[in-house]
Every structure is written in C-alpha cells, then in structure tokens.
Image 1 (spheres, one colour):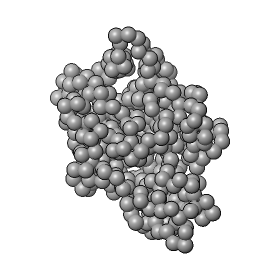
Image 2 (tube, one colour):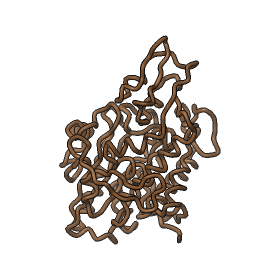
Image 3 (tube, rainbow, N blue to C red):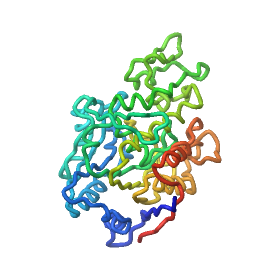
Image 4 (cartoon, rainbow, N blue to C red):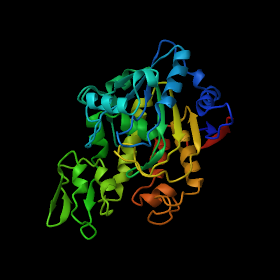
Length: 370
C-alpha cells in the first residue's frame, strides 16, 4: 500500500487569519472536494461531550465542516450514538439536551443533529464486517448507516482502555448502538485491587449496570453484570481498579477497529483530528483534567489510520506539560505519553489491527498547509 497523505495545519494564527479559516484551507488542500457530496446525506460523526467536561470540541469546528459540505451541495448532519454508562447521553432526548447545553444547537453547529441509534439506542443496522476476525456482524446506529458519506470530526485525546481516542475510536466505538458498544466492551472486565481500595464508593456512582458493591470497606465488581465500559477505571481516586487480563483492552481495540471497518467500508469517508486540549481521559467523563501537552494543530485526510497515526506521532513527540498527568503518570514509557498515563493500554494495537484488516495504512506523508 502506498503512503497516505495526511494534511496538517498548526494552531498558530497570524493577525486577521483565524483557525477556522485555516481549517477551510486545510479541507480544500486535503482533498475533501474530491468526494461527491451532491444531494448526498453526509454524517458528521462527532462527540458532543458529556456536560461538565470542557475539553470537547467547540461547535465552531463542526459549523465550518458542515458549511463546506453544504457548499459542495451535500446534506450534512451531526450524529453520535447512545452510551452504556451513567451520564446524560444514554437515550436520544438526554443526548440532545447534552449536545444543546454544550453549544451544539442546529444554528450554532450549522446543521441538524440526529442521534444515530434512535430514541432508546436500539435503532440499529446489522452490518457484515469485511475481514473481521473478532466481529462478523456489527450493530451500527441506523442513521449513520443510512448516510451516503461519513466524515469524522474528532477531538484527539487519551483514553483509559484504547490508549488514545481519535478517528478510529470515534467512528468505531461511537457509531455502535448500545448493543454494539456492549459487544465491543465485554472482553474487558476490570477488577479491584483490595490493598489500595479505601471503599469510598466513587466507582459505584459511575456504574450503570449496578455491578459494583462496597462491603467491609472494599469495592468489588460482579463480572456477570459488568459490560466493561471502563468508567470505574478512571473514576477511582486511588487507582485501585485495572483490567483483569492484559488482553482485555487490546480486544476492545480490535473490536472497535472492526466496527470502524463496518461503518466506512464501501462508502466515501474523510477524517479530521483536532489535537488541542489533549486531555488524558475520554470526553465521556463529566469532568476534564488539564491538557497533558501543548496544543498541536489539525490533521486530516481520507485514510483514517494514517490520520490517527500522524496525530499520535505528534503527541508523543511533544513535551509533556508540567503539573499535569503528562508528568505525573506512572513513569515514562517507550510507547509514549498515553501509555505512561494508562500503563495497561497499548495504543499501537488499534492501528496495527486496522492496518491488518485493510482499513488503512500507518505509512504516511505529512503535508503542511499554512
């Protein structure tokens, strides 16, 4: 497979030249106009952010992308699917309320919002996975599968299960219906280490499955109820919870990648990673820790694997910010900053598997756009 071209612009802006203007130039240089959007429904797959979290993407980015698609005669809409864990995005009405609260009204965002898996998270399409090794049929939100074109607009950040969350995670995990998300997570079951656990019950607040109990001053997890969503890992103030098996996070990454294949296979697609406010955890949390590196810029291109690879390479090359988890992790790692923060993860798994099943290539050429 030849090198993929990934297009990049920095966060620097000269007087009179905004970041949104740079994004417009980046999309044009990056070949988004090569996609035939005319009279096509274009799903802009995004994460609206859990209310309370302030690291999610501003709707200004989405508005810029939606306007460009409209200029190309397409019909854009913003979309995401429901979640498994406790929060304000578990059904469509709550999800829309959360999106509106975070500024994603249809006028601010420049297009309509459709929750991809319907009112209760059960409106799904069964999609065969070409070259799937762990998933033969993926359960994808129906509205996303009904679209003619998929554009992912992604906040690039760390993640407690997959190592990092970029385009592959947003498309793969984010497009799964609630049943699809459960299928992706169910090989990763966390376990409590009793010695550091203080029985505070913080983890229990974030478990939507009632799988966690606290007795005798210690928490425990019922794996028969646990779906492996991973919220308890990040919520524990004592770092007393980790995945039980080293293969757990890796399997989630494999399945997530195969779900991305189900979403994108056979349809025009394009991917945009905004690498700013690079928080150590997912935007699914109702809080956001300080960014672990300085803002870098925007990466985009038609190859989802190459865009994610270029983004993680830039993050790993950056100097961690003092006073953040970037310098207060569990020690340096040859795998980069996110594995330093989340030692049980290996971000390389999702990229290697994506390349293996033919989703894209990690071999890229970086093209800088001013």
